[in-house]
Each structure stands twice: as C-alpha cells, then as structure tokens.
Length: 249
Image: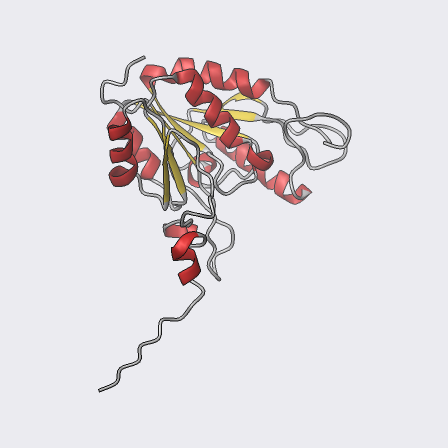
C-alpha cells in the first residue's frame, strides 16, 4: 500500500499516574502513516504489551482510518491472540501478571464500561480463573469519545481501536486526549513522517518509524496531564540544578 500523503493509522496511549509532584507518565496519540501494514501492526502489538501493558510509553489507543481498518484489525487480533499469559516462573509466557489485583480489577471495569457504552470486543475481555492478577490480551474496537477506553488509560494488555474516516479526523482524534507523553509515526516517506511528528502531533516525545521508548541521550517527558519538565539528556540534567545569576558592576 502506498502512502499518497494519507495517514492510515494512529497508535497512541494515555497515561496519568498521580497528579501532584511531577507526574510524567502518560501519552496521547501515536501516528502511523502506513505503507507496510504488517510491520506497523507488529510494532503496535509489541508496544502495547511492554511490561504486560503496564508501561507509560506503551501504545494504547490505535486510531485507524476505514480504508485499512479491516486489515489492521485482522492482523492485530491475530497477533494478540498468539500471545500467551501466565506465571513467568512456570513457563515461557509473553504476558505476566499485573502489578496488583486491584489494578487488574480496575482495568476490567474500564473494559466493561467501554462495552456497555457501545464498544465491541474482538478478543479477550474476560477475567481468567485461578490465582494471580492476570488479564488476557484484549482488543476493543469501535471505541468512541466518552468511553472509558477513549478517555482513560488502559494500563494493562488491552488495546483500543478508534475508527475514523480519514487522515484529518485521525489526527484530531489522536490529539483529543488529556494526556500527551508519546507518539510514533510509521511511513516510508521520512520527510512527511518528520513533519507530522514535529508539527502535528501533540506529545512530548514523537518517533518516526519506531515505537516510543526512552533513551538516556534524549530528553523525555510529556505535556498536559502527562506532567511537565524533562528527565534524561541535557534538559533532564538541568531539571536538577538551579540557575544562579551573579551581576558585578
């Protein structure tokens, strides 16, 4: 599929972890202008399941234009279905437990509220039996404004697909978030990818042809409810020092 100047899919996330003292973990939309849907989907799945889905920079919202929605959902669900979950001490699993049982229950409540509001579950969405704070890989689609999966962060192995008509709506939807930590653009047109990342995405960290990650050489931080200030890189070091002015006449 060629780009023809269109953004076909946007993958993103939301994360807010404790307002107050410089909470800086959240993310808004990550943009995917697709030429290679399979490669982009693989990156989305990898990003979504980082640390069992409990990563501030994991992609969480996937804004997809109708032109590729069917193919993306098929590829995405197939890849997520192939991911196993369980106790990492008992086997080679892709997804481990969530940090606490109450967080698992909160995630399930967000899924249920989204479904009650009209979202559709393509995979997972049911609490497993047995001990442990496990949650299965889950994919929701037809997620719209006002739903928990749209407005809140799903901090676990749950992906929210937000269908849109075209590129402009995709960008508006991706930026329609209280959060703004990370975004990623995937495209063979590097100049266009850079323009989208630099000028159209509203997030503190924007990547082109790579999912969002932190790097000690680069400043890291978000906007809006994703906090303020930066860590890592030269800008991060400066956050820990005071600027002192000495004037001698």
